[in-house]
Image (spheres, one colour):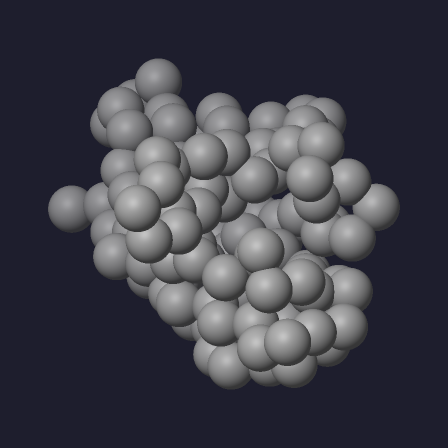
Length: 116
């Protein structure tokens, strides 16, 4: 069974940094697309960043220049480097993987809280 497990969230002051990780287990196949989404209280879940199997990346306008998505296929791990954090970045961050072999999977989320 394919599972995604996120880690790395926490409480940080505005201007600080965090690095989120998402480990994919249960599959020998690299996902076609992986991404990070976030959901703030009272708001809809939104795409933060996405990376394809060919390492093409897409970012939400609100995080461009501050966040960086990357992956290590050998470790089956997706990363999100969050720099220059703002209080508006406070949310639950979810990892998502899409595969033509096993469909779509979501992680359980990791919470990021940015204090002003």
